[in-house]
Image 1 (tube, rainbow, N blue to C red):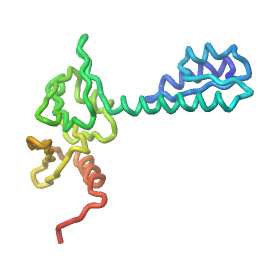
Image 2 (image 1 turned 30 degrees about the horizontal axis):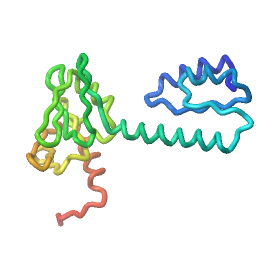
Image 3 (image 1 turned 90 degrees about the vertical axis):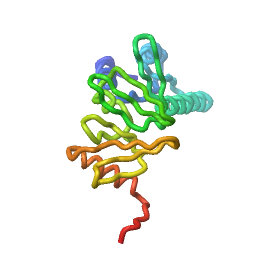
Image 4 (image 1 turned 180 degrees about the horizontal axis):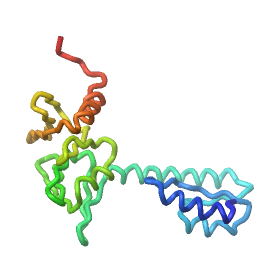
Length: 189
């Protein structure tokens, strides 16, 4: 049971989080159930708890987690009443173009989004790295890093792409190299 003073504070704190937690309310009385569900709680259990009710709650929780994992692999680009859904693993890199962003996908596809590169930098998962003022790359799609030419290379099975990286973002490229190079076999002497 939450005290009325703590209730508002809890909801305020949760609204500031980047990822909302999945919450289950617990109480001895039903009076707070409606408030909790309205506030975003996924379930509400009453004391004394019965094993069957706990199992059902956990199964619903498991289903929610699976659905959220599936949706987190997709980004949605909205333009007026048009919604385009892109799979994260299909994205090679993003390129800034004034106030729009060109998103380069596997199999020679390119999509333009009416958002800035900075917007995507804040929203994309941790496998994306900013390597230039005009580029964000998907680390899982990089096939080669050439420090002499300051280029990253991608192969999508059909074409090869190269993207420049700048000295300003060299630390990001070094981090990328370290992440991708774990367990590597070096051919240099």
